[in-house]
Image 1 (cartoon, rainbow, N blue to C red):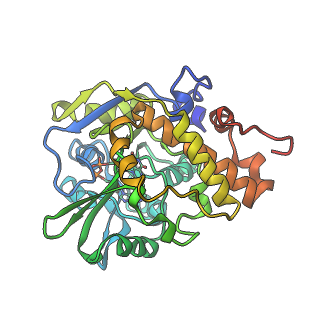
Image 2 (cartoon, rainbow, N blue to C red):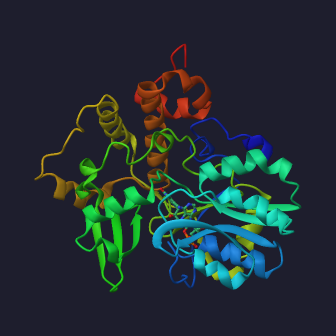
Length: 356
Ligand SMILES: Cc1cc2nc3c(=O)[nH]c(=O)nc-3n(C[C@H](O)[C@H](O)[C@H](O)COP(=O)(O)OP(=O)(O)OC[C@H]3O[C@@H](n4cnc5c(N)ncnc54)[C@H](O)[C@@H]3O)c2cc1C
């Protein structure tokens, strides 16, 4: 499908970051010069979509807005007016059937469409693309490490704060901290190591997410994330159409070269040990309590950052895929593990077996 969408598959060598991030023309660090209020980061995803509508390049955008009964629940919507795109700013936690809006959008006469979606939505979209009969399709993807049900997510918020209903924003930042914002303007930062992960139910992240092989949304035209951005956003321009989407922001976006810092190997190897224990049903290796604050303080300063952080997370996801599939549904491995995943995990002692 990478060849179908981009005209070439990702390069499969360690010297080429395509092994980690999928086919691309360039990767940049970026921020809207005037960050959009209510956006998850600076609002690049929704501003691109807004401009596509205001420049008349599309008739409709399919995206998520908050459900009126629960601000964390994603509600798929067809947006046809540029000024309405602001309703879709920010991240919701949960699954929602955005592709179910393709038929109504096409029936309403929309032939040029843009979609903002996470990787699993974009895969299905690309599989359907040829039969949709669209004149134009723009795909703005975001990375996605893991998703869960909105109900589960509310359980997580309750573990993080005594006033979970007043949490208006949450992000797992690339500096190893979760940022929370509250309705009264308050902010809180919680180091990853202090998160109550062990109190979450086993199925908090479903097997589909724990075995996902596409963290970075390789079939999008442009991926708009933050994981390699060192505090800014991180964009992967994958093809000509992706470049057109970036260009539409004109001078309103600040662009720079992505940075990189640190070495990932020992962090990824430590993660693998924990996943091996968890996949076998054993408790996670726990760090003594007195060490946690020290490591929490050190990680943002010395841990992998920028491009190296992004590679770290992609390798961790690849390891999770192999270990969880082996433990839960080994018969599916030959269909579900693409070649690049095996290359990513082989440095950590995981190699393909005959039946895989
Ligand atoms: C479940 C999930 C996990 C993510 N994990 C990562 C990650 O690990 N690393 C990373 O770099 N980025 C991740 N992202 C993307 C990140 O949260 C931002 O959306 C992205 O950086 C764009 O920021 P922005 O300010 O440009 O977005 P905005 O301009 O605020 O737009 C946000 C867009 O996200 C869409 N959206 C919101 N919630 C959902 C949802 N539940 N499902 C589908 N689409 C949705 C909306 O339609 C909207 O268009 C994740 C997003 C989701 C939904």
